[in-house]
Structure formats: C-alpha cells, structure tokens
Image 1: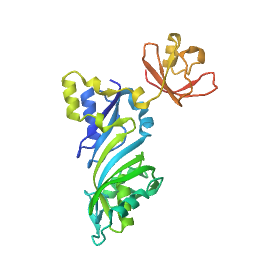
Image 2: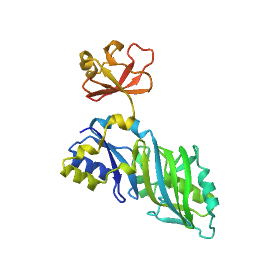
Image 3: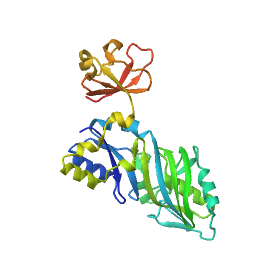
Image 4: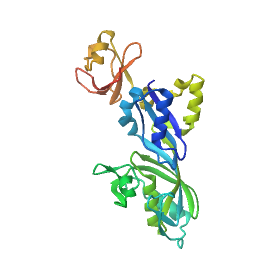
Length: 297
C-alpha cells in the first residue's frame, strides 16, 4: 500500500498513536504524519504510507487552516488549558473589536514565542522534556507565517477564530501573545485543524471508520495518491529507459514518451503502464530535463 490517508485525529489521541494505528491497519511499517497535532487538538492529520513517506518534507511545506477556541483572564506554562496557571487578570474585559484588532495584527510574518511544551529541539533535546524538568520557560522565538486571522465569535472570556498559516506556526503562541497585548492573558481552550495542504476535514476518516473499511475489504479506497496529494504532473518514460530510471539515472529527452512541459518545478516519472518510478526536479534547458530526487519503484 502506498499513498496518503487523510485521518481525522480525535481529541486526546497523540499523533504517534494515530501513526501506530495506521501501521496496524495497513501492515506497512513505513508510515509518517504531516505535522504533529497536540493531544488537546483534533482534526486533519494526513499520514503517508509506503513510498509516500519519501515526500513528507514536500507535503508538509504547505498552508494549514485552524479553528481555535481561546479563554482570556489567565496564562499557563503550556499556553493552553492543560497547563499550570501562572498569572491571572480578570479586571480587564476587552471588547470584541479590541480582540479582533489584536488578532489581525499578527497577519504577516510576526516574531512569536515558541511554547516550552513543544517538540522543537534545543541542543538535541525536545523542548517539552526540558520544560517538564523546569529547565526552560519557553523555547525561544522565531518568525511564523500567518496568512489570515478572523474572529468568529467572542463573549468575554471566551472566543473562537479561524487562522490560515504556514507550517511551524503555533496557534498557542498567537493566543498567548494576544492575551498579553490585550492586558488580560489568554490560553488555548480547543483546536481543530480543518485543512492541511490538499487535505480537508470534510473528506477525512476517523480510525474507527478505517477499521470498518478494512473489515469490508475497502481500505484502499481511503487512500489519496501521491499525484493527487502533491498536484505534480507526470512525465512518461519510454519502455526501453524504465530500468535506467529504476537504477537512478536521470535520462535524456529522447527517453521520454511524454516530456515535462516546464509547468512545474517538480514531476513524477512514470512507466507507460502508470507505475510511478521516481519524483524529480525540472531542469530547464538541460539535456536531461528531470533530475531524480528520490526513487519510488
């Protein structure tokens, strides 16, 4: 089995537990998800299976969309409701307009604090391990890319917003810093990832649904091909050159039945029967138009 399963991770499950369940369901050891969701969060968690794991870095480098619930009036060490309370201030009750203005101020590429309870590495160690030992209170700062934020609902002390962002953006960080800017503190109360690249929550599967599909002999219907997941076009190799590609050779133009047209930076190389052989980078003006990145066959 090869491809991507669009999993709906339910609340309280770890991302690792989802991957473990996919390994059990598919019988394939090579599985990996496209971006961790905290146990508190739920929603879209695409899991790559088989040779699709070779494209994880490319499929992770996409925009994501979240719907987040927040609560004002206090802060915690984890920036969400599961953490230990650090500060309280319920004297200030920001208006809906004030909250919307502060949230929208983060559109762009703001420099935000990284939660101590996160999976980033500090000197080779996970931040959350250092945080549990009391060795750090945050994991530094970095630029995060936020495309859009819109306040959906708010009545003090709770509210909800939708946010579109690039990988590596912590919703908890936005809420934490917005709370400070509003003068009242804030924590994340809930989070749903609604979109991850080509994957939408409306077409996702819970683990129990996949278990039923396997029982019915229909598990393969749940897979999205790597072609559909990436949107990359396909260049077709001449039958005489298929083995050359399987051996890692970036073949010359005359070895193609269907040449890459330059419409994309990345392509799949396929045999005439449709078998995917490799994915490759387009090289304009080169005698070998595609340079193999990784083999799939």
